[in-house]
Amino acid sequence: MSYTKDISLYLGPSLANLTDLRAQLLTPSGTLYGSAISSLFTHVGSGSYIFHYESYPDNFRGGVKFYQNAGSASGVLAIHSINPEEYEFISLIKTQTDLITAGGVTITLASPVDANGDITIVRGDDYKDIDGRALEWTISTAPSLVGSTCVFTARRGNSTVLTKSVTVVSATEVMMELDADDTTPLIPSTYRFDIEATLSNGNIVTIKFGEMVVTKDVTLH
Amino acid sequence: VAYRIASALNLGQKYVGVDLAAQLYASGGTFLYGDLVTSGFSHVGSGCYLFDYNYPNGFYGHVAIYQSGSSGVLGLVDISPRLEQILYIKGKTDLL
Image (cartoon, rainbow over all chains, first blue to last red):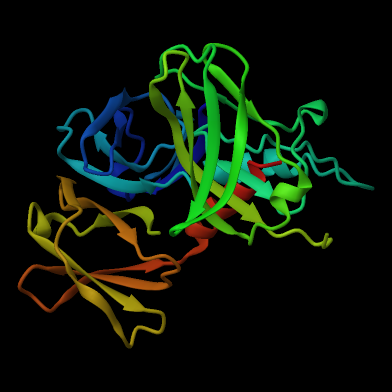
C-alpha cells in the first residue's frame, strides 16, 4: 500500500510557470528509484509549486530531487528528504489506534508468535489451543516433521528457564501450548529459544531459533 | 539500537561534489557527540546532498555539516528522537 505526501517548493520568480518540472525519487545513497515524475506539479504563483504524489512506496526512505527537463537531471533545483516515520507510519498508527473505540476498547489479541517466529507472551497467562492462543510455527526448511518428537527450550544466559513438548500438527507445522504454571515463573525479560526435532529416522534437526519476550502482567498469580 | 534518518542538504552550486563531514552535537549544542562522520553523503547534483545516518538510540540534538578539512559550518540539521519514538509506537500499535 503506497501513501500520499505533498511537497511545497519555492524556486523563485525567475522559475515561475515552469511546465517541465520533474521529480525523481532517490534511495538514501542517492541512486535513482523508479522513473521521473512529470505531471503532478501545481504552480501557485511566483515560482512556488506544490508537488502532489500518491505513490510513495511502503517503507520508502531517501529523497526527492526536482529539476527542469529542459536542463539535465543533474541540474537539481531542490531536494527533499523522505523518512517513513514522518508520514507513512503515523498514518498506519492512526489506522491501528482507530481500533480503539469510544466507550470501550476493542482489542484483538495478536498471535503470540510474530512473522519472524519470535514470541511475545505475558507472564502468568495460559496459551491454549482451545482459546485460539497456542503458539504455532510453520517450518519450511526442515524435512517432514511427521512422526518426529519436538521439544522447545528457552534459556537466559546459561540457565534453562522452560522446556516444553511441542506438538507436530503436519509435515511443516508445530504447535505448543503453555500453562499459567509455565509462564508465571518467568521473569519479564528476553530469552533465546529453539525447537529441536528428533525425526522419525532418529536424526536431530533444530527447526527454529528465536527470541521469547516475556512481558509483565499486572495481576500477580 | 540505532535509528535511521535521511536528511536533505542544499548547499548550493559552490559545493558541487565536495567531500563533506558531519559532527553530532548533543541537545543545547555545547557538547560534541562522537567523532566526525565522513560517510553517508551522496551528491545528487547542483550542490544537493542526501545524508543517510544511523543515530544513537535516543539521540536528541543537531548535526553540523562541514566541508572536509574546513571548520566553517555549511548547514545545521535538527535531530529529534521523535522519529525513533514513532517507530517504537508503530511497533506497539501493530500488536493491536
